[in-house]
Image (cartoon, rainbow, N blue to C red; front, side, top):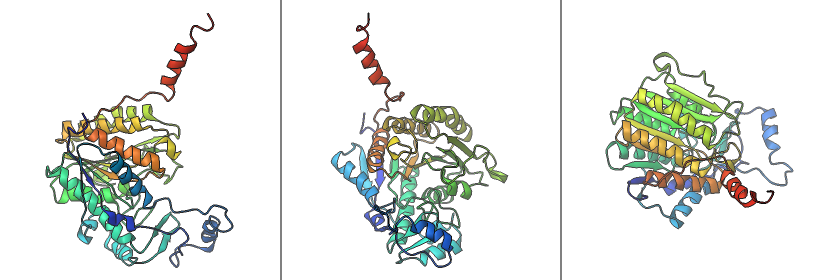
Amino acid sequence: MIGERDVLVIHDERMLAHQPDAQAPFQPGKLDSRIQAMLGGLFDGAATKWSYPEHPGRLLAITDLLTLEPVPGVRYKTASAATQEQLGRVHATSYLENIYALRGKQTWLDVDTTAVSPGSIDAAEVAAGAAIAAVDAVVTGRAGSAFALCRPPGHHAGSVRARGFCLFNNVAVAAAHAHTVLGCERVLIIDWDVHHGNGTQDIFWTSPNVLFFDTHRAAPFYPGTGNKEETGEGLGEGMTVNVPLPAGSGDLALVQAYREILVPAVEWFQPDVILVSAGFDMHRLDLCMNLSFNGFGMLTRIVQELADKHCGGRLAMVLEGGYQLESLSRGVRTVLEVLAGGSAQESEEPGMHDVQELIAFHKEAFK
């Protein structure tokens, strides 16, 4: 029953201060004239101007729905900004210094869809801090499970580069905190965003302490990484599990991948805590893949059962992508319902229920 389980949502309005302007100037020396001209075509003479997809309305859509339709068992907490020490566990000092230098500015960083506004660096520090607060709460027993509503997102950010709307890698910062501060020897990161979490993969590529499992739309879809042969190197060999899927994949494919690839991987790894990079752009309304709300519910149930079995229910989710506001907000609420004890409905091929009703309606007509 919904409300039987305790769920902590980390939300902080300071993350709304990240408001990039798609028509802001570029950083000097970052782009040659050819690339600038290409991007300029998105604005010059266009009837509808391209706007920055990762905007404050994403969080507002989620919080508005949760206010309108509260989920029993869910409580809220604000976040503290991540410190340089916390961020420095996964990001190079030189990179952090370059990002800090952009505080108070409005500019594009480079061609890879990443820009900042005057409030962006503060917002990004709070986003990383929210992810830390989520994992801290579940490991210390102050919450049954947790969901950090983070923006800007993080899973494309590498140790030395901002990419794909991401400045700091929130889930990686949380994983490093769990390992270094909270004493978790084995950290599992699951990424179900439609885009491959290339930044997270790069950061933990050689780590024996982090198992990274990623289901995503296959290359050449952005960022073009995440082939099944990418499994880690050195001490981290075999600790990266990529499941690239074709564009039409939906509930049945994702659920089977989780049951038949993730479950045995977790049985082998025996994690101390589970983190999820929870993007909602796999939903069919985001036009990238074909997951339904029931599909998100089923994935949540599988992951929750794994957490209950292997690590005392220690499960923390961190928001990544999702740009269609209805599927984003309703998807988050669906996940929270399951985390709070709600049931997850088994998925079926879209239209099957309707077809069964139509069969019953028409079956006597032609006898």
